[in-house]
Image (tube, rainbow, N blue to C red; front, side, top):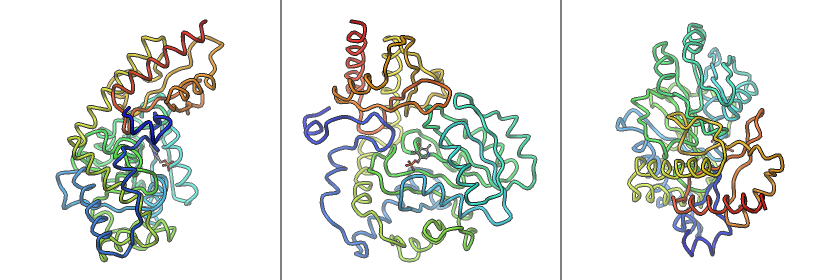
Length: 373
Ligand SMILES: *Cc1c(COP(=O)(O)O)cnc(C)c1O
């Protein structure tokens, strides 16, 4: 952690969004901007183009839409806009964010069916293949990195089944896009959703959707909400390039643009992935050496984004005390989100480097010694 960071921030966020941002990103917010000025609209257009280029090499087939609100607003905009009145959606879920999509679908009164799995379980491809025999299903949605646990769902394999049956494929890649390399065209995703304050390392305030152009073009007039009409938001941004329909979070947009430049300077998504992976592996190994147990097996399905640890066996362990000790040492971690297990989570996305993880491990070790004394 550098000196300037410590001056500005009392602690490093080891939480997956909002996360610790760079000084440059925070500085980009220190002036006011006009929303109808061309300078701003060009910036918005540059962001949209950069997002498509980050997502795929097939840039002409895809388009990006920005949407006010946190990431969930963009998920709801997709679900509420892209499913026609007589459509039917299958939601595959194994965590809180997948369950949130189901909640949205029900609230929107969509015709919805689900495949539910425990938070520590991967979706079963045979179940999915069987379910997809229902000819009424038109759309399928699933979360890529389930931030509840840090589990990376097999989106590529699920997508192959979805596409074999010609369904529209929606992926919540909120906490993986920008931090895990993949090509949205190779994986044949129709709608990918993410937000400003995850792996691109901006600040909270808007989400975005990268959509297959020919799919989005079919969504006119289908939205079940005015503010969250993804098609209308997109067609306004296309027709009056860079214009948002309603007031946009100008400071957040500038910070995000700066964050995109920093991602490029770092070496793009593959370089960022390597940094996150080093963070995650150092964290998991170090915590295991201190006697903590990971909830998810440390294999290809453990994401480089966030790791879940069980509370230690020691009955005197208090998460509250542990949390406060780490906060005093300059690190904020996350409580667990698994219904059946006593656990906590440590994220490693954002302006977090392996030295920070090493310092964190020292602070955890100190707590252990102190707790035993
Ligand atoms: C962060 C996140 C969201 C969006 O959550 P918000 O609180 O609305 O920002 C959705 N899905 C996943 C997998 C996430 O990690």
